[in-house]
Amino acid sequence: MNTWTHTTVLLNEAIDALITRADGLYVDATFGRGGHSRALLAQLGAAGRLLAFDKDPEALAEAAQIRDERFSIRHQGFAALGELPPASVTGVLMDLGISSPQIDNPERGFSFRADGPLDMRMDPTRGQSAAEWLAVADQRQIAEVIRDYGEERFAVPIAKAIVARRQERGPLASTAELAELVAGAVKTREPGQNPATRTFQAVRIFVNGELEELQQALEGSLHVLQPGGRLVVISFHSLEDRIVKQFIARHSRAVVDRRAPFAEPAPTLLRALARVRPGEAEVAANPRARSAIMRVAERTQAPLPANHRGGRA
Ligand SMILES: C[S@@+](CC[C@H](N)C(=O)[O-])C[C@H]1O[C@@H](n2cnc3c(N)ncnc32)[C@H](O)[C@@H]1O
Image 1 (cartoon, rainbow, N blue to C red):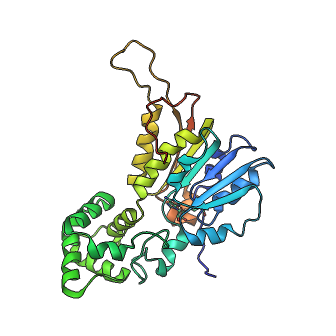
Image 2: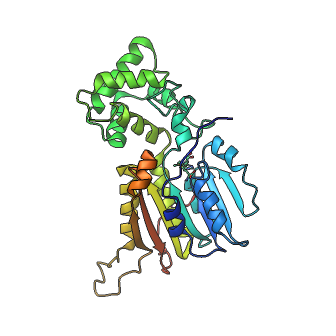
Image 3: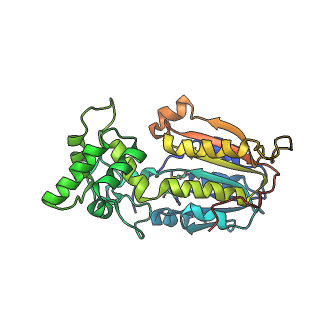
């Protein structure tokens, strides 16, 4: 039993935005340690249901503590939520990224602060670890990942250093080795930030396919949300938030058919409702909340266009 805990971000704000009726079916796409799920269950009525997803076996172990017939969880990536029956869900919540226990436990390999195996998988039972990927990827691919997912100016020198080290002394095995190598390749420091921050974020996003899954899950939510149902997404860095923001904007904008410019525009699928940031008190109590941005949208009455390309498997 470990002692790592997770302080839920925007707890009340997310639940208030999500719940429109007490007897609906809700999806918590990112169970974590269940902070949002427990608060949601406390507000649902006897006929309400909550289906959760998480990739992390430790999240599943925590979920096993919840003995409530209205609750179930799947050990699956949340991109699969688009496979639920069409228009069956009253609200979808996504609290993106990693949980505090994942980052605080050095054995998970997410952190440059404490040494551990270079893993970074949310689901360590599947896929390639960060060490396995960095042992085989070519320099160009490593540089692209670090540049695109870490927005790191020194992506090329970092990738070169990783490949050179691999050739000289064998592949990187630990988080401390990667952090040290990156620190040597990053020439200018950002105040208050560890030089490895951007590289660790980038490798983690790549290893877990985070942005692709997010895009698929957002598309899937259009299929599964009932009219009036809510989509609530909390993101923690600009790449995620940009995807969420653009997705909501794209589906909230009336599309005029260029071949028939005077015809009624196609009805929009979403209505943007809110953008919420944590208050000063929450950030003071939980510094990990400082970069959080929550976006809320509502599924309109409009049927999906026949040619809509969703993320359904
Ligand atoms: C920020 S935490 C959620 C915390 C949770 N709201 C709470 O209050 O305890 C994010 C969780 O989502 C999971 N996760 C992230 N991306 C996922 C994905 N694509 N599919 C399933 N689970 C994912 C992570 O394993 C982690 O447990």
